[in-house]
Amino acid sequence: MASTGQSAIEFRNVAYQPDGSREILHELNLAVAAGETLILLGRSGSGKTTSLKLINNLVVPSRGEIMVEGRSTRSWDIIQLRRRIGYVIQEVGLFPHFTVERNITLIPRLEHWPADRIQARLKELLALVGLDPELASRHPRELSGGQRQRVGVARALAADPPILLMDEPFGALDPITRADLQSEFAALEKRLRKTVVFVTHDVREALLLGDRIALMEGGRLVALATTAEFLRSTDPLISAYVRSAGGSLHNTALGGER
Amino acid sequence: MSVWHFMVQNRAEVFELTLEHLWLVGISMLFAILIGIPLGILITRWPVLDKPVLGSANIIQTIPSLALFGFLLPAPWFGERADRMAILALTLYALLPLIRNTYVGIRGVDAAVVEAARGMGMTDRQLLFQVELPLALGVIIAGVRVASVISVGLATIAAAIGAGGLGEFIFRGLAMVSDAVILTGAIPAALLALLADFLLGLVEKRLQRV
Ligand SMILES: Nc1ncnc2c1ncn2[C@@H]1O[C@H](COP(=O)(O)OP(=O)(O)O)[C@@H](O)[C@H]1O
Ligand SMILES: [Mg+2]
Image (cartoon, rainbow over all chains, first blue to last red):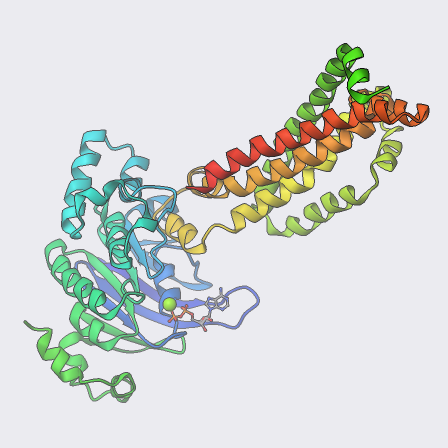
């Protein structure tokens, strides 16, 4: 197992069984290095979202433990833990009664940053995620789907957390907007060098954005490979997933190197 | 004698009983809000309590008002004075719409919004006061509105136990078999209900634009 000192996140023999249900996550062992982007790839229902929520303690493991920055999530103060972890979900979950500005600056406000620092950070974030500053005074319902997701990313990055969790963030967007956001996010990742755990079922997205790809199936981690190895892998489970996902993946992989 | 004539002749009493009526409704609504909204919030936090609490409030509301006054008569302290009893009964009746609307309003907040709020590290208190309550406020005000209108009507029954209010005219008119006297109580009561409905409707509309 990877040495704990280096890992930003580490799952140790983690299992999760919701109350009154069968176990849905089994024996998960996985270490995410600081600064890497790890993709959790798998079909719907394979346990990706549950694994992600274990990291920010929205879900509590029934067995094993999750170490974040070397400390078990059980011993972290939950609020402190979550403030160090940006969280972006497919449904975005923007606060409908807040303007874009209030949405993005929520955590800095809760952390009592001085007003001028908040304003400076807001400008910086809007530029970072490619949003027109004029949108700052709008409400979420006055934005397009792509703009909303940009706000969601900006909000998650607001207090500059070292870890970012993303759950199919671009899944609900139209193909063209999705491609835009994917390539912009790929560039953003390189600049920010955060530890990112990114959930998707889309092999192309995984190859474009990931350093390593963890393949999940039926609540288990079934394969782990670097993005470079992934397509060449002879692992039958990986080939099966790639085949079932279909598409001209080799072209995408080459295109992804531009 | 015409209604108008009777009203003008007894305008001092009409005014006094209207104020008494407003006081009964106002005080009981205040208590109902102070009890009902926190109870509604509480049962979103402890879901095991939701059925018993909503069920009890529901049962109270099905008790006929005269019978409820009867039940309260032997209650210690409350039974001693008619206005206390009336306020207690009106408060109990107003609870259901307040508890239910608070509960439904909070539960109706988009799950993704709540998940994002928790995930980014809002405390329970911040989630409640900055996200859930503001987003549920329109529904909660709708509950206050319904409760107020019901309460204005029900408060006329308070006169049956001697608690005063516009019901005085109604019961006096019934005894005298005089439409004019009945209407002298009923018309202001109906106007009060319409006014409460209209004003709270305005507040509700303002909130729902958010
Ligand atoms: N709280 C829960 N109670 C019962 N079953 C759950 C719960 N959460 C998730 N599941 C089930 O666990 C499986 C994995 O869910 P999830 O982690 O959301 O998968 P994914 O994100 O890969 O689609 C699914 O079959 C889902 O229905
Ligand atoms: Mg999922």
